[in-house]
Image (cartoon, rainbow, N blue to C red; front, side, top):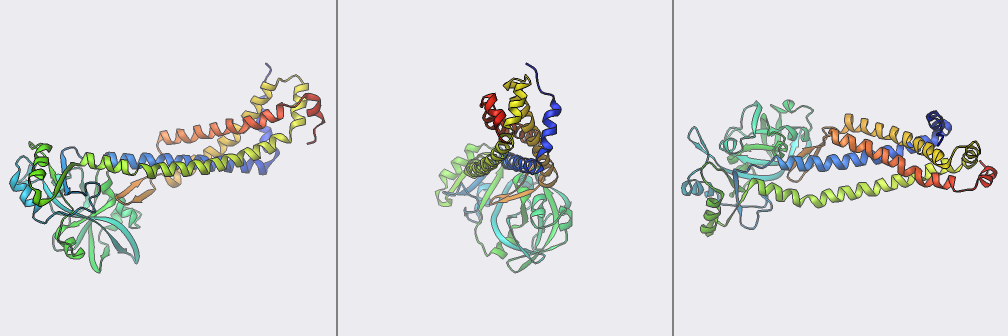
Length: 386
């Protein structure tokens, strides 16, 4: 089968600049949406996957194991747990039992309102959450109204670089706090949080209960915590490992991911239909040209292949533009949700997904118009008007 030269397809791209622009825009928009949806799902799942530690057990209020923010336990719970169970992680005489408050409160930063998850902690928290390490500044000191902000939380607060937040003032419910440091957590969800002194947060929030107590196991076993929670009915506790908690949280957000995917698919279908219309209009006006090519000895398969090449070229241009925008404008973009913050990461797999989607759009978008052009008999095609 004699094929049309590749230059034939490339020259035809410039015959209608407006149609070419519409095709490039449509394919680029569809590819960009697909990449955003893919990066959204990958970013959220990756953040939640590295957030929990198997050896950490969370003791929450009974009936609130699905949300630490709604949980309430007594202020003396941490001391009771430490005195009742042996085998927690210890370092320099400090035992790995961390009483914590998790609460979302409005902040005032540089005159703008922000909403960030705040965690009230004691120094033991850094022993329990061993992935958290302060990269700049110092830990919050009790009674000083000091805060350390996660790397992503600093971006949420409006700072271009996390280090720029150190020394700044944050108003929390009429109390002024000072940022004393920045911490990282190996990409975990806590990087979107702000940590402050447990006592200071209690005073500011006027709260007399904890959200949870998190313990780091050494020789103790998870079953020891289960037995403790079951035997101390008066404390109304439920024990769950951090891994299980964040796994359940990931399952909870799957409907949101599905909604994002469905929305992107619907918009993508709209973009594809628009692309089909422009491609169909471009090909339908060339029926006589197709008939002429057939009289010159080119088979319908060769002509169809040339039309598909033309469509793939225009769709690929849109895909490349979309990938460029995604890499330079959206890579590292922070997304905040109720439990913290994660980033969109345009990985090699996401870029490959975008390029592949663009190529697929080019093939699918050319099939129907090409068949329409080729189904007419040669005499009728030659009599068709341009």
